[in-house]
Amino acid sequence: MAIPFRPVDLAEDDSVVAFLIVEDDADQCVRGALFVIDARGEPVEFAYSSASAGAGVLWRRADLRHRARTALLPNLFSAIRAVPALVLVRGADFPDGLGGHIEMSIPTAYLGASSDGGGTHSITWEGPLPTPESAGARLMTLLTKRSLLTEPFERASAGLASAVADG
Picture 1: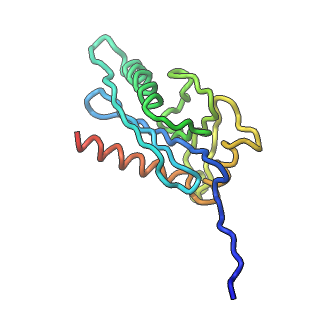
Picture 2: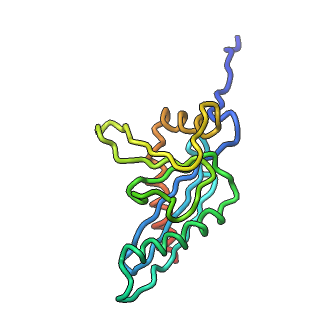
């Protein structure tokens, strides 16, 4: 006798989410990665790039950092083919948001550090807010249920380190 079953479709559509990381290195350079996954957490795309912050005694360090990040972000976003329904950013990477660098036309969530140690993160939004029935809201719900709000940042960082090491 056959057992009735129905496969579970986690995404219900082809929506994807992008995880953005940016890291400073010791050589006045910034490097970053955009890691795109589906609702299951499976990789869809990965892009990385770097930008020089320039140098000189006349520049303030914060201005050099801002300039390099402003150069880096368009390179990352133009390198991917997928159009994410949502972008997640580590709040520590952009404490003042992306607004000073680029204008986001899709919902962008900044994840703050977990305050309770149990995985509850503060979230700050930039760009349009996702409506409750939007692909971005569905993805956020699925990622939260699957504990995938922060883990993909680790994979993005590992991918960036590997890409940099490979030259």
